[in-house]
Image 1 (cartoon, helix red, strand yellow):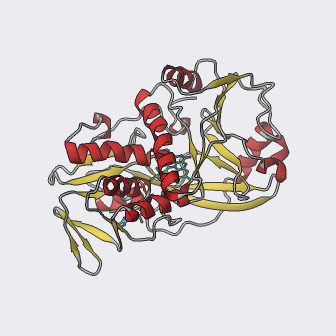
Image 2 (cartoon, protein in one colour):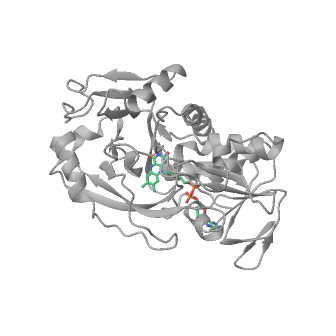
Image 3 (cartoon, protein in one colour):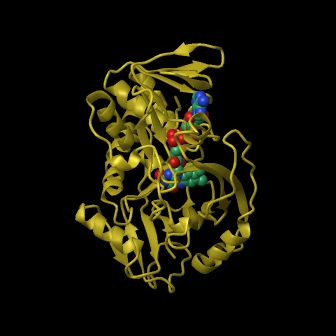
Length: 367
Ligand SMILES: Cc1cc2nc3c(=O)[nH]c(=O)nc-3n(C[C@H](O)[C@H](O)[C@H](O)COP(=O)(O)OP(=O)(O)OC[C@H]3O[C@@H](n4cnc5c(N)ncnc54)[C@H](O)[C@@H]3O)c2cc1C
């Protein structure tokens, strides 16, 4: 149930393994209302000192490339990913150590002289950490490709809104679906469907697109993230405009509520652009979109069986950083579902306590 990055990746994975798969979604795969909706997502391996997410992100690169080969389209744009480090020994330095230990390319650049963008100021930074093999995923296209390739391997797609019913699921037209395994990968809607088991904060996050002109459309301009300041963005990809966003937790929003195209965060975004990318401060706004985060308390994912029905699994809690991990999470889940391989304890249901954010520092745990 659910054809976002987690559900569609799992359907693809299981269908490739010649399992019989039905993939159910209330929308068409790649719908803008899903948490996986929107044109682009950052792809990075840096996760501070966290070795497991780093490894999984690196594995994601191989699996997204396999999907590209099957689908015949470029989904992962390897333009690089730049981290703006305010401290010599903060999140970025920890990331650098983890990346290096895993043999993942990472370069420490002098922030004052780094010429990464058509307009850039880094004299307030300790350094820039560049992941040359990081980049940007074409998000909605990737989800559509996952679903299409799942179908190409024999999966069936059903359009409908499902509700849990014991070990199975029931659609609005009363069709009952049963399976050896039923996985609910329903993004923000997990909070509605399993609110007694899953603690998720669903928030509205704004994305702004700015016309920086042709200079920002050159290939090879890295995605960027200012972890300590909770700001991130991309160059102008696919003529959408330069993407710039605030990663502070937005206002709560119901999973079924409309997503307005407001630009409430524009003054804050422009204030950041003035400091970091001065030429963009007054560049015209060409688009504004919203998307829903589904945040666990500790920003760790959820992947666990239902306590009352061992064949029913709950998967999600992408917490603002889940997109890239769809295929490797599916790989691990498939091993758990088919072979009983253990999953990390941190994906379990139950109480979680706040810890250093895997998204950005906007959880308030770092300066
Ligand atoms: C603004 C924004 C920026 C982000 N940036 C990044 C980033 O740079 N990098 C990154 O890796 N991640 C990023 N993320 C996070 C990432 O996109 C999400 O964590 C991930 O896409 C969640 O995927 P999902 O499959 O769990 O949920 P979803 O994509 O929401 O998929 C769930 C699906 O379940 C369906 N569904 C729900 N309930 C039902 C039901 N009852 N019956 C049938 N179908 C149902 C929904 O229609 C939906 O299609 C970002 C997220 C947002 C919102």
